[in-house]
Amino acid sequence: MANNIVVLGAGVSGLTTAYLLSQDPANKITVLAKHMPGDYDIEYASPWAGANYMPVGKEGSAHHKWERDTWPALKEITEKYPEAGIHFRGTLIYNRKKDQETDTGKWFSELTQPNPWYKDVVPDFKNVPSDQLAPGVDNAQEFTSVCINTAVYLPWLVGQCIKNGAVFKRAVFKHIADAANAHHTGQKADVVINCTGLSSKTLGGVLDDKMYPARGQIVVVRNDPGPMMSTSGTDDGEDEALYIMTRAAGGGTILGGSYQKHNWNGIPDMNLANRIMKRCIDICPSLVTKGQGIEGLDIIRHGVGLRPLREGGTRIEKDKVDGVAIVHNYGHGGFGYQASFGCAYTAVSLVKEVLQNKSRAKL
Ligand code: FAD
Image 1 (spheres, helix red, strand yellow):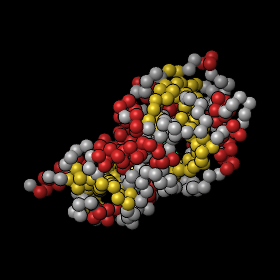
Image 2 (image 1 turned 180 degrees about the vertical axis):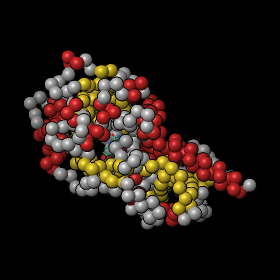
Image 3 (image 1 turned 135 degrees about the vertical axis):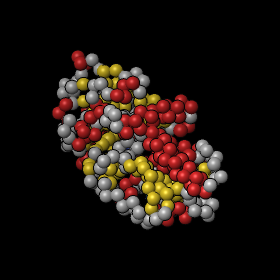
Image 4 (image 1 turned 90 degrees about the horizontal axis):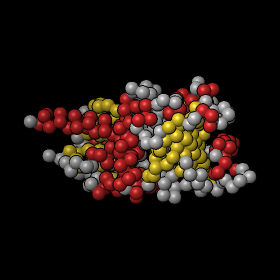
């Protein structure tokens, strides 16, 4: 018996969930979304991400489990499918204890501590010897991570889903229950998976007022310094960040950033952009030719994305709205890629529960 499934949302959360579900031929999947890969819009977080794997989930939390479970999948895709636009990259993390009470410092507190859980997950983890630390840095570590070229990876996910029979359609919904009536077969969907990110705040039937943005501003440049790096904070502001991510497959280098909670402004702030570029050159002089400042950066574009944060954490659970079975998978903040497979595995197991109940009801 076929299972009619609607995935609402085509960001990394919706596409990863659809990708896993599409591997079972019994699932007939329609992916519906206002924005699709190729679009750049302030309502669509996924294209703006770096994106890399820098775990931030607190040890013992569900978030920790989702990130831990995502690494093997990203590693496998990197090794088996070079066309997915992911590569391995050396990564350096610098921690300054003075950042620990700032928004950025709290966000990165698990990432930057000297003995994090992820040391047993990522390859080549080692602490930098204390006599090699730059002034002001209290501890530092290096490991091998991945960097995802989102402009290649998101379309790759779409392609995998289509190859497995999924159908993609543009659609905008005011109410989540309406999505159940838009399955490509013309039949009502058995379940709708809600992967609408920050829009879950305003989508009828969900209206989750725990959702809020953390604004991330970036500069994408052609310069390629090699390794990735990140710090626990900056001296320019408590909600500003410093990271460098070198994307695979000619995707350029992402210079970041900011973590501005409750800030919805989609326009790049050029003063912030200058601070971002200066900070990145200070920490990584090899970004430019010796002696150059920000004039040595070859800018592709400035960008702003809104990380879909949720008070109390990501929501992955079953729900019923106006008689329609829903599985929510939204609220992934700044970790939507690095937790993508872990979250999607949980969502898929809930979808299976919904479908089993449907089969039992029909017996
Ligand atoms: P989105 O990508 O926002 O997708 C939502 C989808 O739902 C869209 O297709 C949209 O059109 C659709 N939709 C919404 N409402 C409706 C509606 N009413 N009707 C129809 N369709 C609708 N994460 C990492 O893991 N690593 C990183 O290095 C990283 N770096 C980041 C850097 C920046 C600057 C930013 C902004 C984010 C970063 N993130 C990173 C976080 C990551 O980008 C997000 O967690 C992730 O993209 C969220 O994906 P999503 O699919 O849940 O939401």
